Image 1: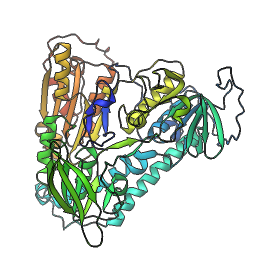
Image 2: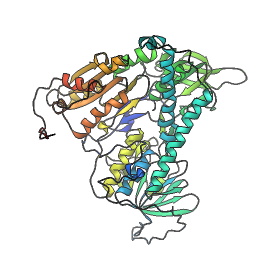
Image 3: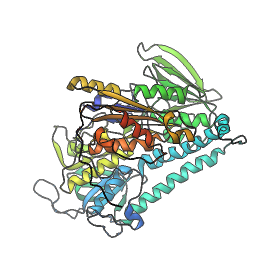
Image 4: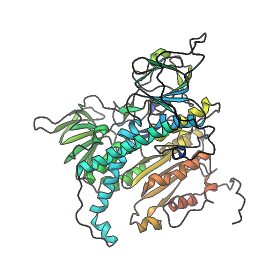
Length: 570
């Protein structure tokens, strides 16, 4: 959940922005085109081992142990200054979803592992992002159903006017975050991961300090420190009437009129929440269209369904150059300047303003200067294997960086996948994660999901590499389950190569789109071609048939496919 989806096939500096001061938007790719992927893309779920079920592929489950506090470096030093003996096989700085995923996979591989956390376990996703926002969106979804008299009458239902208790809604979000945070903590403790409290700082090769004076050594170190909300210059955040997503998730009040700066993931999801709870919303977007990071066709349909019918207006092609919080009875004031001419265009007066312009990497104070690493716009530079690169362009031995801190793809499940990939490498298995196979979703009502390239990106790539691009589409209006739910508004779009059946991208707008996208993302991850997937069988009637019809409607010029599995007698 953040502000924009964009794609970079080269360096992070080519990220499109909706504001010139944005450090990073929600999702962008800057990675390898390799199709090698990890076995598991865990997000916030607990591993099977937590419930007493040992994975068949686990190499070793380490018995629980008490956290160690090491006040002195007990390891001897080699000739180059690196320790020759280590307190841990792996130390992870940051216990968010990325650090958690890496830690659990490391234990499964038999590594003695510790995570260092200076705040709370779970990071942004669990405490100030994905998890509490989904609690608020669950409320907004139910409110929309109860408020939609026409929709309910179609089912023969009559419901009295719906209302809500703001504090109870806020408590639901907070309680969910607390529960997931506790689950993540317990899952690591149960498997023997040491959780060390304090700010982690790299002192030198394979050496980390946490807290005031605790120093430990590790054969390998992973930086997983995440990100914080990015606030452009000229915007004064008071945490009450001018807020970031961190404040908005507390839902301390529901304004009559709120301006949302940025129309990407964060902005869209909060517009869904606020309008369902009765607010009027005004979007402020620097680019010429709303939802600039989405596939244009999907974005156009989403605007028709998610924006136009609701109490939402918008200003595009403008920057919020100055925002002043409400004070002494005066409203929040927002000065809008033209994105091209920089001249003052308008001034808004609203009850509140939400800054949804993306996120910035949380990498200050890491001690990177001690190992000659210079950040790039705050991001830790890494190669396609998440290995950290120093100021001279050389790899820093035994040091990796995953998640929002490296800027490759700012999603919680991408951080986890990167962490798993790193663990595979430190265990001796070469592994490169294909970021184009990682899905993303926006949990509006209805939802938006995507994986791979947008149509413009695919056509640009095709022009450079000399291949043809085709597009197939299916509508939710043709799906029995969607019609039974009276939710026929939706579209699935497939972008592919007709010469060989390669899937370049899939985009879905409609009921449960966030769940449906995984068939496509897994197909890309496993290197499946359209001609292979056409043989898959889907239960009827289910929403999954939207994807079934989508793949079947694609016209592939060749008939080459993988071998069909042997028939099994039943």
